[in-house]
Amino acid sequence: MSTSTSSTAGAVLVLNSGSSSIKFQLIHPETGEAVAHGLIERIGEPEGRIIFHHTTGTEERVGEIPDHRAGLRAVLDMLETLGRPLQEAGVAAVGHRVVHGGTVFHEPTLVDDDVVKTVAELSILAPLHNPANAIGMEVAREELPDIPHVAVFDTAFFYSLPPAAATYALERTIAREHDIRRYGFHGTSHEFVSQRAAAFAGRDQADLNQVVLHLGNGASASAIEGGRPIDTSMGLTPLEGLVMGTRTGDIDPGVVMHLNRVAGMKVDAIDDLLNRRSGLRGLSGVNDFRALLSLIEEGDEDAKIAYDVYVHRLRKYIGAYVFELGGVDQIVFTAGVGENNVDVRRDALAGLERLGIVVDPERNAAPGKGERRISADDSDVEVLVIPTNEELAIARAAAKFA
Ligand code: AMP
Image 1 (cartoon, helix red, strand yellow):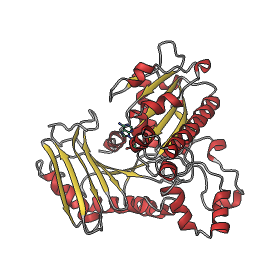
Image 2 (cartoon, rainbow, N blue to C red):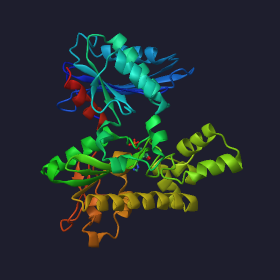
Image 3 (cartoon, rainbow, N blue to C red):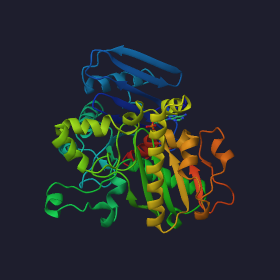
Image 4 (cartoon, helix red, strand yellow):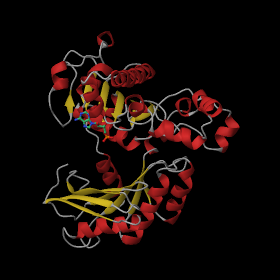
């Protein structure tokens, strides 16, 4: 992450509050320059940690951070060491990443008491994330009362999914009573990356069919037609779809009943198993893709199977989405694995020449961090690597309210 020497005037503070962490970035919405960014972790534990990257270096502090208020106060104190207090320094807005907007929030929303309350109520749909998002907004509004606060929802982009893609074939009274539908996640990233991909190619997104593959520790795919999503791989929760670092992705729900009946596992234990002990970690012992590749190099069989399962699922989704779209113009890789892993990009699209999808091996393997094309010149379909930048997308959405 590069940081600049520019002032904080006009910058947006982007906050991503987790259950025991706060990620923050002070970023200029126009240029994408980060004035400062960092992470507070282990909130509520005896040994909390703050990492703060700014114009002239990096600072790290260790010590108890009792709660989110103390964490945010520490962030603001550190940011003030860069100059004047944020409110006086012309910070334009605070953008809050919120995971679940339910059926209520479909677009970036100015935060007031009701919004905080509703986000907290939606915790039933995202018990790990929404409570922390609500606390983060509450505390930040108290600490920075004179700046607009804007909630940007991870589900919002996918709210307009066509009913055929958004609806589970579940008894409808139950589904309606409990707001059970496919919501999708990583929406800010899919929207940002699909727009950047069109701009990179110098094409109007309205004319494009795109498949976006957000492959990070969490992973999701989307099918986007003329800028509107028509399908995505995550559902009611981020558990559905692709194989991820620690999540199963798609699995027969019969497994849940089976584990309950046969292994006597209760719902919380199964939740933990499917969300945190499965995926690459469950199959190989490691969830980090670099560690997985090292194990494969050492000849570890389980790691090889984990990789094959990961790629198999990915290809299945790509195929489904190309078919749903009736043909594709761009396939776009993003996030930690998608931006950096040559093997996954190669194997996900291997042998598809007859569908007009040809990855150029040299372009794919060329070192690089920026936006780039990795398809061959004679490929009908453009294959691109587009780094995601959710913070910038959130900053831009928030700046519209300044
Ligand atoms: P994210 O959630 O987007 O931060 O992505 C995290 C994942 O990206 C982890 O599995 C990392 O191992 C993987 N990743 C990050 N950098 C690289 C790299 N240079 N090569 C392979 N995988 C990487």
